[in-house]
Length: 489
Image (tube, rainbow, N blue to C red; front, side, top):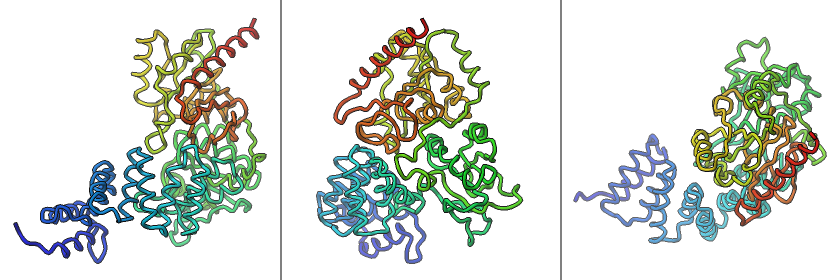
């Protein structure tokens, strides 16, 4: 076997891995060199650590975690190894394993802010915001500028309903994150045409033309749209240009007819900016509006504010000839990154609810929904009407909004449909997980701070399955149907 200078080769591989000392970053080339070194020194912990880290950067979570776990068995005192292992285990859904890895990293590196920040992140949406807050605060004591820690502190405070403190930390989502495994949550936009003189952020007081651009998901944009009326009191409706996701353009233009709405995903207004006589004077992401207008519980209007297309509502209503109550149902929300496993219930598990005599209308937008409703009908004899052309991802959201507006009641998992119902004023019962996101908050409250009491939260208790929630919803649905019949009699 060829004799190599492992130290020199490892240094070169590290430079290529990181793109430093004049080397171009090339993970494939770095991996090849690491593997060549391991041919001669298969138990070298530092080379294995570098190789495991490389695969974590490639989001090869399982392989990276396996390598790092093997390194930890050889040499347990590499603090960054345990921190990186925690990142991989968290991505794989092993929260307990991740926290143990972070704890060991903290023992070895007590002055590194990344570690308590990561432990705070584990506790966000885990139903323990007070613990998340404590770890985030510790991280910020070590590094007051730590972006991830500020973001985690914001989310913990939002879950706790500490509105006056939370929104300022929430601005951290506009900064580049602290580690190499993520980036901006919300990328900055510039409408000036001059990268050296970007469009300034609105200060909540100045009059002038203002672009309010979308961020994150459709549900978030609908929720933050409740602040538009507050903005109009300062700059006027004609001083506003709203830039939501394209699927929301028609809905927002109808609801806010006196301002311009341009649905776009493009940064810096490239869909419309050249048509403007004057460039906008200010910009602001939708999620930054609450820091001006929602700093106390009393500042939330909690009233409907969206307007569905009446013609589309009539068309949706006409599709169901029955005189039975029209009740919407959805059973899955989110994706892997937003805890789909917490926000989802198998459709057959809802049978106790679905046995009631109403017309069931699916609001489930996922690709598997067509198969799921068909299988459920075959096994249960219960039909759930499903209209993929109205609700699937990619459809104009006006159709979905109209379908929700045609309902007498919506029963839904934690997903965007609840925001539609909340903003329209449609009665809505939300199957709320024991570890909800900040939009639904924690505690025993049966109502969301964002919407009126027509939106009711049925909260899963920590450590319980969905059974008690389903039984409660089914019982309330029986009473709801009985009340409607009594009123109609």
